[in-house]
Amino acid sequence: MTAQLTSSIPASLPSSPPSSLPSSLLSTLRLRRLGVAAGVVATLLVGAAAIGASAEWTRANAPLTETPIAPAAIEAGLATQQDRAAALTDDVAAMAARTAQLRDAITAADEQVGAASANTDQIRTELAAATAKLATLQAQIVQARARLAAMRAPTVRPPAAIPARGGGEVDDGN
Image (cartoon, rainbow, N blue to C red; front, side):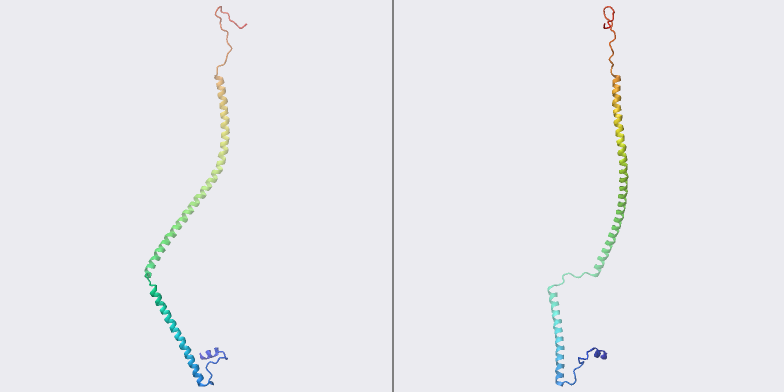
């Protein structure tokens, strides 16, 4: 493992302090490294203390007034909503079936209206012919009534010879 670590360090950087340095300089380097490590540890401790104090301050200023929901209550609510969803799914399926029935009824009604429309045109033609025939018949009835009235009317006859009172001669107008 140390062979892997030393092989990953570039050759330009020494893996350990050179032994050619004086011992006082080496001890200074060790003290400096120790001071840096102690500073890092102290910084981490101060950060952790600050986070703890912040958490305590937040907890004190924003207390939890409501208790969290119990898992059993969540499961019961889930079961209720699943039942409701199943009922709604059944309702939607029933509405879809009813919609299909209504669509079929509307299609059938449209077909009947189309057939009735064609039949209406035929009936209008027949009605026009019947109306014309009725007008002809009514005119014939009027003519027949006029002839009947003429036949029933008293005809004016020329006066027949009326016997004269005096001698029985008939005056023939001469």
